Length: 84
Image 1 (tube, rainbow, N blue to C red):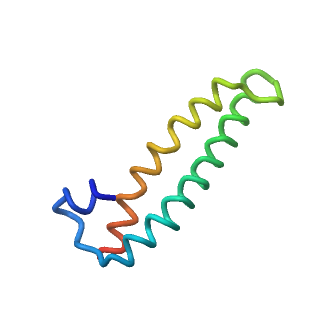
Image 2 (tube, rainbow, N blue to C red):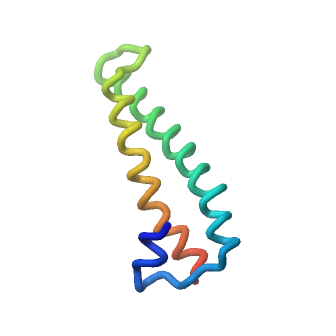
């Protein structure tokens, strides 16, 4: 949040209550939604490639790695939506 709001010139300043709302609700929900989607994607990709239904630990590890990165980039667009 600080990266996009305090160190960026493109996003306007937000009130404290909107920061709290984004941090408590938005980032937690985003991590769950993106993490769940990436886990389903990893399971589906594993099933298509290997025809195994139990999943692959490597695919789930990559999904767990990329989920916070995607949530970080989603923070920029949520701040831009609230700042405009």
